[in-house]
Image 1 (tube, rainbow, N blue to C red):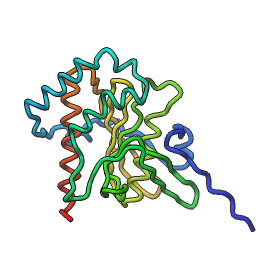
Image 2: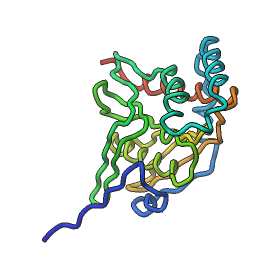
Image 3: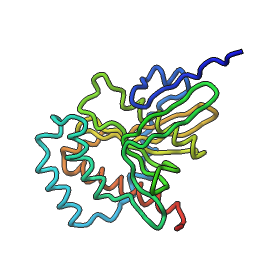
Image 4: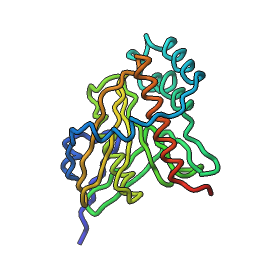
Length: 223
């Protein structure tokens, strides 16, 4: 007897309704979940502040106009490079367009991720943090569902209970926390909007990225 083909869902195409058909997932609207993360202050130097100010001054009129790749290269990547998630001694770095796959008996989640931070220097061995989208607008796209699918895959591949990420729509960043409640059952939290076209919000974004970087590195012993 031929076994039925397991449906395959790609991160870049999955929609809210599709995700909710294969797992039980609901949003928890409590914003207190972010207190521990957002109340931490990373060490942001005057040089960091000057860098962010100069970058924003240069790109502010274009952030909402850029296509996906333009936004990534011109504005997002310089910020992520400045955060610098790479640590050779702990064998951690950031990856772009890295493929990951999570398979169960009933579905497959797979595809190339926009950005992730992972254990491994040659390829992603243990994903810790994801950023999804870099798109100009939400029209015809589902950045929230796409990020959640990636977070589910990363959480399950690592046997984590909690995993974090962010999605970007034009100038707006939202941070996300996903928690596993039971088998194929999750809830998630979405932060307030952070508008990267405003310097105060951009500095907060940078701080939150630094905090997650240090949390990841502190959890890993040197090789």
